[in-house]
Image (cartoon, rainbow, N blue to C red):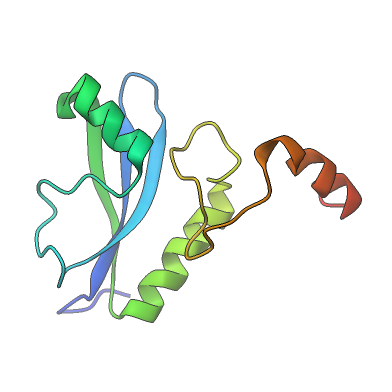
Length: 116
């Protein structure tokens, strides 16, 4: 759904030399322009500082008509991409969930829950 006055957007930042990504959400009312925003991930921002913005692409995936829709969409992207457990992503949490099982115990947990 595209809104005439979107609340915010879901975005992807990719480090070009490694293909490592970050999926995030930004509200337009907190920073009304995409230019200059680099996400809230400390490891991502450290890499941007060290390697420069030219090594990163910034892509707006879609706009969100409301805050609840944006939070749902970001969380959905996090889960379908498995961002917390995949080394391909900078993300260390999924949506609003700030805690996740340790990566080292993830396979054991999946086996116990019979998750493929």
